[in-house]
Length: 391
Image (cartoon, rainbow, N blue to C red; front, side, top):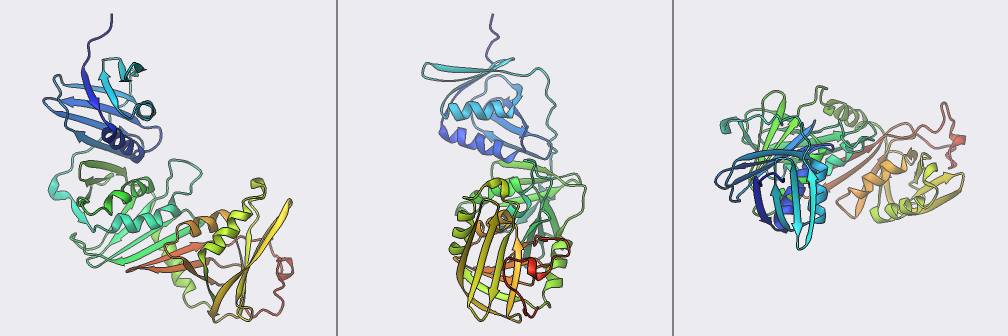
């Protein structure tokens, strides 16, 4: 004998998209909670170790209920049924459309979400451009081998400026722009990159709601329209100081400036991918010479080589310079450029490559660590003839 229905509703594609966006906000391996509160309040919550998200929907609810499920089950069902009918029983969740129906058994024991309530007066308004700028830096913190990245995007706010940095130890990005901030003093928030990338497209819409943020010492709470998101505060310290230290140390160092077409370097990297991916631990060598007015790019593997000459405007205090960079890191930098041209600073084979852009009122800095080709390697070991280079 089947158990009685606790809840039943007809849903459309807009509801599916909203729930899937909630699921994408929460960290992988999350659980889902559906809660009905009479007379017309349906709460959907996704919760996991790092990021939790929830939102409210107006649907008639006759009997109050709470059921839990694996988040993946919910998202898989909505992918197969973007619109249809949802019904909930004590032990079963069912989605149907036309004559097709799919059931998912609800697990008997799942931990309850920990979603602290924040008083409204404890929340501060964030400048509307924060998520847009943070998305420019979030890629640098999202390169972990683990889907549930432990890296964070650092958002530092003062009364007239916002500075956003992120790094995974190999790539770093920094975005600075003017901003109006209503909070007191200087505040730093360490947000999971998953939150940034999911909310950034919504925050740039004309009718985007205000972004509010607060902290209870263990978690941040963000309120963005109907969305409520909590992010655990990492126990490790912010890595902002290490990024600032690199930028400060490089600023007085002699370098070579090269302004090149971003698409030409991207095309070279795409061609390099045609070689066996197992050999992609080999670096891309970039060599610039002010007398030639170009940047030479070379990628060598046991299966073949690829090289190209990229026209460039060369300047700076070094007449020639060379650096070896991971193709993955260089590809990530190129794919997140905002402008069709890129200005790179090459400080030498043992110093980071720095790419800067001015996009609107924002200054964007990308940093990629070099690869040491050989321990104690001489210039003769490099694929370019760099004899007599004044570095």
